[in-house]
Length: 154
Image (cartoon, rainbow, N blue to C red; front, top):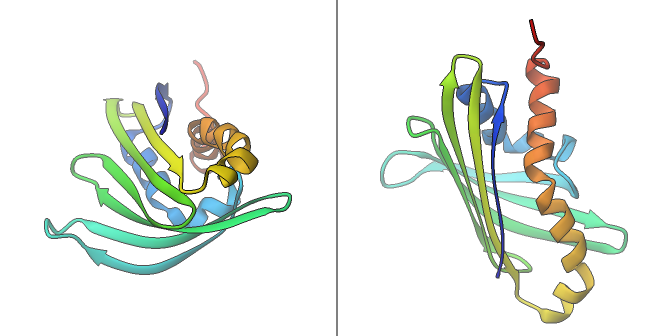
């Protein structure tokens, strides 16, 4: 299994960053390799937290794969957890945590663990996915600047 972990300060509120990551339907507009996303259902887990089940299609040149994920949104805890349900991954989990630093900035933690079912697919597509996953946190920060405006220094 491969891991990617990052923690960074961003000049946007924890609430704004949570909302941005929770808006899975917007992912094709800015997430690396994401060409389509279809929400299959909205539901709640046993604790009453919203859950989104979605199919994401990722593509690069001749490689095109769709996988299903379960996205659990825990706004009171400022946490989003994503678990793979079906697709080319043996395991795909990512966890977002948003820690308010003040009203206009927060620390964003992003943890990702993944591995492919097929070793052949991993050899063919692994490097492309590695690069894309390492750019995820950057893509969300850049998107926040577009949606909420870039912070300016006084």
